[in-house]
Image (tube, rainbow over all chains, first blue to last red; front, side, top):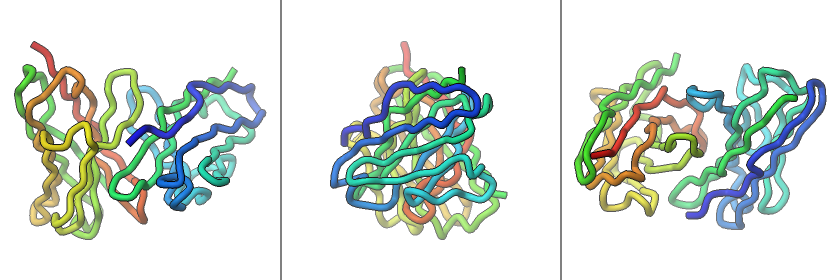
Length: 109
Length: 117
């Protein structure tokens, strides 16, 4: 039950786009389309941003998009805004359990 | 509106026990798998356990297997996590979360468990 692999940090300027990767195995990310992404601001509960690899819940900006290729999923945020600065976690169904990535801190310069 | 409200956290000595509760409202609790997820101070999210809508199936992370027990009372719309034989490394905010379509969609605000002598 190893965590999914995410970069520890990414950064970008307002208006730019960034992509966060999430690498797993064929037993989790590569084996299911149950990949989700969460945004977490300091001292707040996580918020669902993407589910089923690429779907957005109602109310989430279309600046957020998701994709997957093989064992790696990705979250792209376009048109960066100051309010996007937060921690982002990927998550995947993994058979009988669930796996999270280690988290990526996004800094908006 | 979906609401998940955890309670029961606190300071406990190593080797001690606690029971965390999560009161659910705003949805048909008995129709959903539910999860516990924890987050150590300054660290990432870690999945702990999940339970079938009728309580008949439970799964655990290896790190808590044999020490933690997830359960639910659908009549009371409440999820529980019994945590025993606590260790310093169990110190974390424990989140209750709802499963929808194979993924977590709603989270509670969390309950802090601190294991220290």
